[in-house]
Length: 246
Image (tube, rainbow, N blue to C red; front, side, top):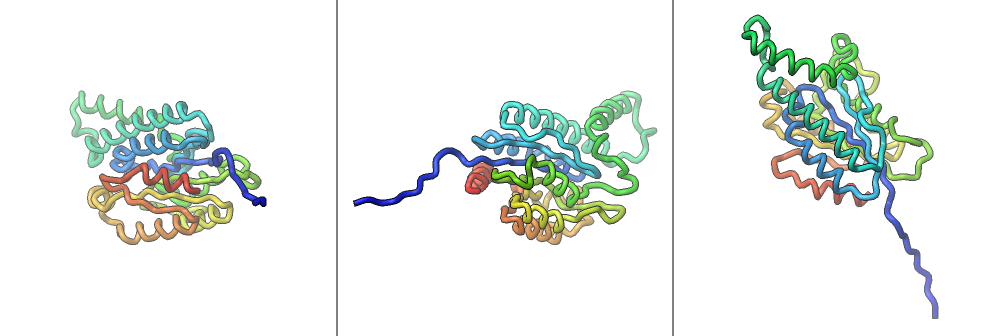
């Protein structure tokens, strides 16, 4: 007697991009969530990781790498940036006139501003004309940062954090739904992380939370990925498990 059996060995090779909306309306989410991102990266074995950040324009913050220690070090740099961003927004987010500051406060303001500007400069190009938080362009730019997109046999995933609160002053080159369609066409799944409603009450009160949430959920699920709301008890292990199933 005999039988035939197919056995798959080795680990599945994945390319995973973290795609982060770093517009200032997201400072609270990014500040609270970046530690969870680090946990996700540490939990992904046998994969390559990249980081793409965007506001008006997109910057390839970290090209695809399988060096997780390097990836974690770059995330630590992001943690420092979000810490400064949070401090700036909490102290000066509602500031309308610098003349109201004391000499010491002005010195502190300029120090924070310089730190942020050093990071932001490449992502706010033409923001006065184009606006900010261009979600679709951020996702599409991240997609085309994958190496060998057209012929790679690796599984490709995007882990995207945004509030989907686009503030475009003119029509973007590509909207979120169009970018999601491109991801689907190229077999790239998107896992979306969306803020809880309490963040909108503080920073984005003029947006319709339910509408933005529904729009992002629909776009993410079109790619075959999954949608999560970043509540206080968000289980990052569940995200890792979901990603590892792909």
